[in-house]
Length: 258
Image (cartoon, rainbow, N blue to C red; front, side, top):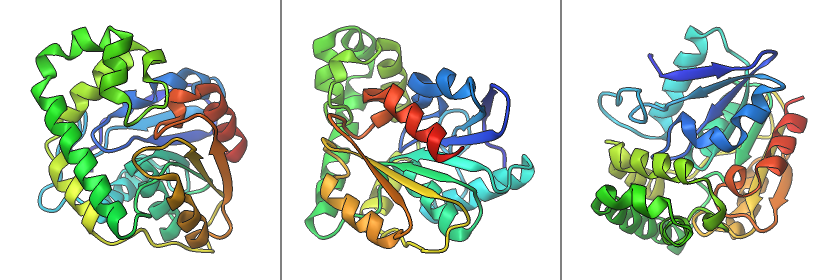
């Protein structure tokens, strides 16, 4: 399976898996710091960035299968992995399957129940409609602290502090992802993420205290399904801890995958 990716740094490889609608550039706030210690391999998931969409179904299962094929093709079986949001769920799924080494999942999806499913779906569906409509104005809006706050309050606890170029790229990528709507439906209403107490490497789950998308109450379920995982709260952080607290996220990732 061809997956566009970049490699930076040297040392033991570390795979980074972005969230729904993003691409490898979603990791820009921490990429250089991680690459100073490891060889970072940051991928575009199928249907994201410069990686073609999968034929047929696009779901957690098929994206996870594609990642396994990519790891095999790149001689990265057993690699340490980090993921956020959808990427967080995917790296937990790879850990459950026994395909990877140390695993860090930041605000992973798949642990919602009941009304939380509808909350996730309605929130994301409304947001992507707005992002698509506003594409011509995104560069101007992203350049302003007020614009960044209006556009990304769902993902960041302090969007006004985010770099404008990171915001522009993320919102452009959201609008350009052809499988966004299908993945949103399948994530919201498909099977919940299964767990394991037999992952091949250590598992760390991090969660933003102020996450407005995968609500903090879901963290308990994630730990229950991965009972051997170490848990970390990011205080004052939203859905993207590596944006809101890049230094803390970098330290957590490097310590967890050492």
